[in-house]
Image (tube, rainbow, N blue to C red):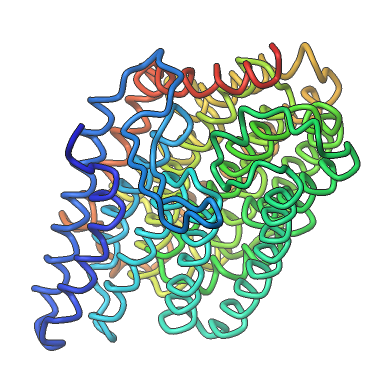
Amino acid sequence: MSLPLLSIIVFLPVLGALAVLLMPKEDLTKIKVTALIFTVIDLVLSLVLFAGFVTGNQEIQFVERLSWIPQLGIQYYLGVDGLSLPMVILTTLIGFVAVLGSWKISNRTKEYFALLLLLQMGVLGVFTALDFFLFFLFWEVELLPMYLLIGMWGGVNREYAAIKFLIYTILGSAFMMVGILTLYLTSGLGTFDMVVLGQSDLGGIAEWMRTLIFLMLFFGFAIKLPMFPFHTWLPDAHVQAPTAISVILAGVLLKMGAYGLLRINVTIFPDITTNLAPFIASIAVVNILYGAACCMVQKDMKSMIAYSSVSHMGYVLLGLSALNAIGLGGAALQMFTHGTITALLFLLVGLVYDKAHTRMIPDLGGLARQMPLVAVVFVFAGLASLGLPLLSGFVAEFLVFVGTFPVWQIQTILAAGGIVITAGYLLWMLQRVFFGPRLAKWDHLTDASFLEAVPLVILMITIVAVGVYPTIIMDSINSGVMTLLARLGA
């Protein structure tokens, strides 16, 4: 295509941020509508991208390439394949939902929505960049908006949570940068081109050095995933962040780590990935069971869902460790389905908190009488999270288990126990918060308004659509998985 569609999708939010900043700060409605329009356009363009994507074609599509710093082999290089396309759609969808979920923001509204749009630009850049230098640049661009959004609009301990997020992420970025530079200097190819590096055998680099580079990159992505024991920043960030920022954090930011593992570690270092697959499978089980067990003892609903993300991202690691078509496909699909389901859960927690002014499970009860719509959707989201058939969470976890069991039987059986624990903590939470005896102190609560219900319905439709007809996403994902399998020699 002559139209630079990817560049438009990536940088359109920047134009939206500039438009918002140029508006009078008193005109809150115009600021919010402008941000919403830009996210809607971005979502529509991502769907146009999806419609024009040729499934079955393993090549990078919608390529945009310009020489940037030729002396160092740095390019402005964008493109999408079956791994990145679903993440682009997920990011624009969650960005749109996050703006709707931020409609009640009235403090420093201009700055809030401008940072929200800049954050979306950074994440979209990560999923479309195919030059290591550009990839790292976008990776770092995401840091500052998220830090400010938590630190300025978060809860009581927002400064602590924001600083902790920043320290963890910068530490991971430092290891990643060293890994990227080491790969650039030792490969002898003189390029940051991910595609070229992914098609080279790198035989000139000693195995111990390739392993070291792999681990440095793996560490950076593991923090963002987050992988045990580097997960402790996530619950703090979620509990203190505003609702819409938790939606983005769980919906797309965690996927940056998983995407990096698939795009970079598996593609560029297939032999090292194969050697370390037993370790990845084992740590995946720890993620799943530890995260689920932590959920059982949480009293704050937001904290519970945060730990559930630690657990569910373990399924991505488990599917990756199988290194076969079904496992890798399940891991990639889990990234998409977890993004939509967890975003829905955080929106629902935010609605309960806005009306009841508490998220503490022991303080709530019988809310289904006052909030029937929220209760129904919460039950729906809980069932999707625990993997009910015909909902998207089931398809992803089923593929992960089927792909992993022939390779890692014990780890798969242990990981399946995570579903039982997930059912336990979610159903227990739903029973305590929405059902049981009516509490008179909550008689004044009202149900979700029309505007509050719109993002809930959109996410529900997405979850059902992928659950009933997963091919709509899997056809694209399979194109990317075939490239990974070719690198793995499978």
